[in-house]
Image (cartoon, rainbow, N blue to C red; front, side, top):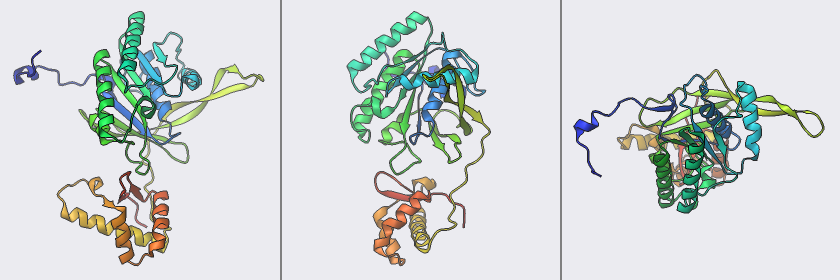
Length: 346
């Protein structure tokens, strides 16, 4: 097989993107949704899975129908109720849908496990006569062997994913967690984000609104942010005492911009600490050519030292840092770097 192609042949390739879910997920792409626990990310993944398996538009976005394989890290027990609730809410039967949930997690880092997975996917698609369209891995952490913060381990994991999607010519959707401190990014090595064709962040507000925001789209314009809510659905079944059974399903609602964190109500020490941090960031911005404000970070240690020169008592620094984190006025990453969040003026 030739290594290179002349540009004349490259120019003959289609410019259009082959969408699995139009504007959201590409065919043969590697995508990720990430969020905090209980943010609604698995409900969104199930929602996408059911739409692709039935051919139902995903909230007005057309889909290519086909087989969906859902690798459930904690087993498939909870997905029975979620699938039933989706069916009722969307008035769409799943009885004959080519949607398959794993009995337990699969170690994608293990080549032998992947061989078994490939064989079963091939057998089931041959049986249904339908193309494999989507593999969902929920969650990444349970399907990966090794350290997700290790670039070497993550590179090996991504290589297995690439082989999986290339073999079956389908999309892969990973469900993952946010960073331990920096909630604006997915947890683990940046090797993962570099390999993605698209990435979505899921957040849930105190009033229960679930927001889906695109944080990376490699080959096209990022889609508009969307909002959802979890709705209790009465299932066509009774519990062991004869009472109605209600389970949640997700439905789309009108999107509104989230309220930005406000500095109003901060105490003297919090204002002093935030002011010191902004001074350091301003100095960094003046000394670099990168125009991306999110690329400007300072170390927590430098921030502490500068805060002390501004009059903050050393023993109060950790208290100030925690209160600013809780108020979402700062972001601290896993490497001990910090930046101010965009805030409304007080």
